[in-house]
Length: 480
Image (cartoon, rainbow, N blue to C red; front, side, top):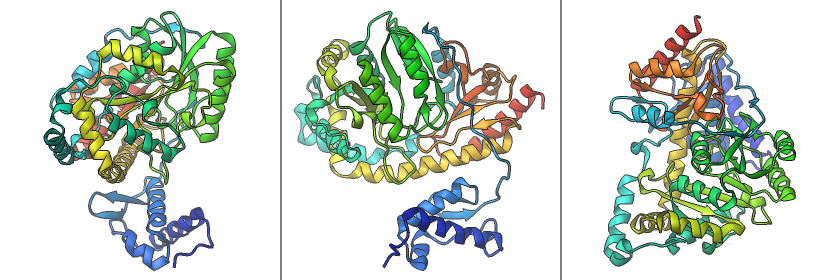
C-alpha cells in the first residue's frame, strides 16, 4: 500500500531527492531515460500522481526534460538563474486607449504562411481533438438535424449550459444552466459584459500589463482605462487597486486571475477572495476572464473569483478557444445579477450563436472526452512552455527576465534596458519570426523593452532556431 504517513509534498520531495542523488552521483547521466512513472511508483510505493508531481518539479528545476510519447530524460542543466520581471508601475490616471490599427497590422503579418508563430496565443491544431469533434458533429447532424440548423437564441443550447454548470461545481462555483449565457467566443463575452456594467466615458480598472483585446474593447466602447500595478507571479496588486478606486470613480474592474495574459500570473485563492470583498464594499462589478483556467500545471484547477461572490457582482467570461476549437467560437458568460442586461446586449449584438457547434461541444463534454483531452493538453502545453523558457534563458543576453507561469502557454519577457520591442518585432519579421511587442499591452506605450512569446504550437527545430535568432537580434539591439 502507498505510504500515507507523509504529506503529498514530503512524498514528492522524497522522490525528487532520490533522482537528484542518482543524477549527481553519476548513476543517471545526461541523455539517460529516467524510470517511468509506473516503475518509480512501484519501486518507492507511492502513487503515480506523486511521481508525476516530482518529475514536474525536477523539470522546472532543469534536471530532466519530457519527450512526447517517450518519457523523461536527464538533461544538461543551465546554471544561469533568470529572474522574473519586476512589478509593473503604470501611470495612475484614467486614459483613452489609442492602439489604432497596430494590433491588426502586427497580427496580420504574424499569421502569414511560413512565419514561426511565437507571437500569437493560439493553440496548434495538432494538439486539438479534431477527429473526436468531427465524430461529435456527425452524430449531432444525424440525430438533431433540425436543432443543428435552426436559430440558437440566447441564452444558448441548454445541453451545453448544463455541462458548463456541472463542471463549475468542481471549483466551488454553484450555478445552474439558467445562470449561463453562451457567446461567440470570450471576446464577445467581454464586450457584452462591459456594456452591461459601464457606458462610454466610464473608468474601467485593468491590470498592467493588460491583454490588448481588453484595451481594444475599452477603446471601441469609448471608455477610459485605468492601469493598476500587477505582479508577474501573483497578479493584480490589491493595495494599488484600493488606492485607485478611492481616487477615481471606477465603474468596473477587468482581470485575468488565472494565468494572466501576458504574464501568466496566478492570483492565490485568498487574494481572489480579498479582491471580491474589496469590490463588494464599493459595489463595483468585476469582469474576470477565465479562458486559461483549465490549463493549470498543478494538481487541481484554480478557483474563479465567482466562487467567492455572494452579491452577484462577478461576471465570469470564458471559452473553449484555448483548449478545444478556436474556430467554433463557443464562449460563455456567468453574469451574476447582470443577466438581464447581458441577455439584452447579446440579443442586439449577434441574435444568437451557432447551434451546431454548441451541440457538438456539449456532446464532447458529455462523453468525457474533454477531460481526457485536457490531461494530455496540459502536459503538452507545459512541456512546450518549459522548452521555450529554457531556450530564451539560453540564447538571450544577461539582464533578460522571464516569467514562470503555473499554467497557460504565454511568457512575458523583460529585455535589457534600451531594447525596443517594436524594432525587434520588425527585425524578427524579416527572419519570418512572429513576436508580440510589449507596448501593445499598455495605454501609454509602456513595456517598450518587453515581448510576449507563446508556446501554443508543438516545439520544433524551427521554433528552437527562431528563439536562437531572436536572441541574436536582442544581443545586437542591446549592444552586448
